Length: 90
Image 1 (cartoon, rainbow, N blue to C red):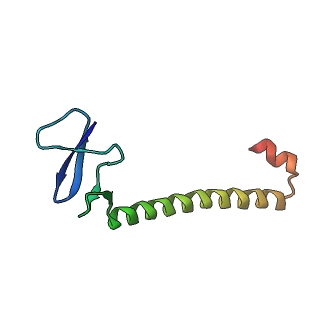
Image 2 (cartoon, rainbow, N blue to C red):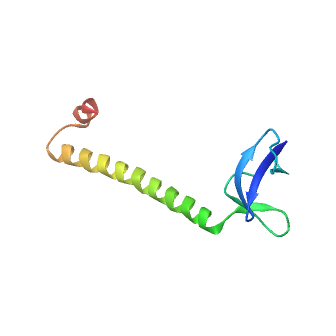
Image 3 (tube, rainbow, N blue to C red):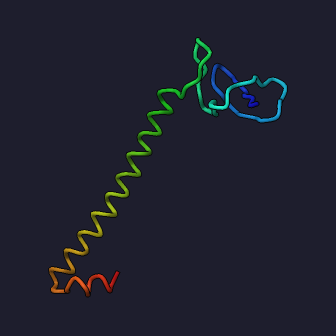
């Protein structure tokens, strides 16, 4: 069983042992979720937007790293290094 501290329909904290003031919730309920009027739980639109922004930023960082590596390889090749020489550097 899982218990949640819910304030203003927002899950503030989760506890596995019962704590006074907490209510029993399903195992798929987590902190930062919002309790809907039908009793179900989901993340708020703001929380989901923040998560998507973070995901996009991480993807951009990974792509920038890939682009920088490709640029460096192209520059080394343009300097006349062979593919084997470039691989040996890396």
